[in-house]
Image 1 (cartoon, one colour):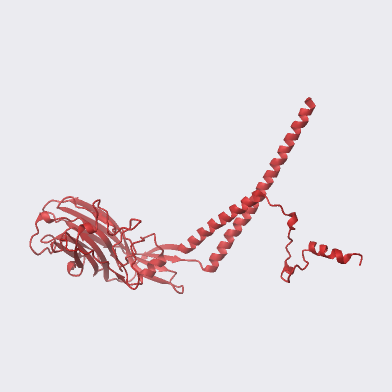
Image 2 (image 1 turned 90 degrees about the vertical axis):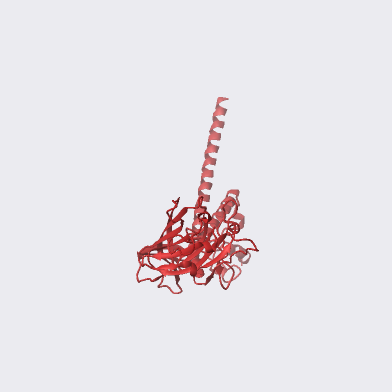
Length: 384
């Protein structure tokens, strides 16, 4: 028919709605440029590489933000009445265990001989601190304390995170597990010169203080009078926290190493304890979980005292009447995917416009350069 059948393939090639290979391709209504009409340029390749790099960086940033979640901090008046305040202590004092007294006195008038409820293990000061005064036993590659505390039912969890550094979901997950205290290093026949005092005390939830004093001195001293030359209240605080024992959390006084330059020296720590609730997800959401613990702020005052003043380590704590709620929320996987698509799409659009603008700028500059060269050539010809 006048060669129509011979020309038909060429017509179908130009027709964007003509079937191409399979039925799905037949619905492709977007016109495509032919390969012979496409020109690959070096600038286009550079822009493509730049867009891929920016898209990858923004994707990693969005993934990190989604993984961390969002934290919401709110304060409220603590509701209800609390009666018990657990205190977790792990302290090494450079004195023999039989020469130390550990006592607690609170605002309710109760006095507790804490040494009877805490564990006391003879140890060597050299096992904990090296010649430079650095905590040798409890330092990891990042300089954080490791005392061997961990969680039962699995591998030991070291002090690898601190307040403000770890994820809330990790705090809650570890807080729901039972913790255990680390073991004291063996003496291997050496004579102990220090005492490790550790454990958990159940105290009244009121203002109070606990103190480490020498035998025969201070509150409820009792026993024979200890010679003053044996006083040495240099100490290492590996754990001092309120509430459930969470070894993975580093509190303000953890990693503390204080040396007493003289025998009559008094260390005083003033703590403001704030009840804190860590939550993953809002309470009304399904699958949310939370733990109740405490944070505290601390100030220190240490000084040499006269011989008529009791030396030692004194920790005074006061409980604030406010409650800190820390809630971690995280977008769903679907919403995270939508955000990633939006970010990458924005990069592609911005990159396309950037390429077009730079290409247009090159074209304009090229035209101006050609015009200026042509005008100079004409002027030079007329001069001749």
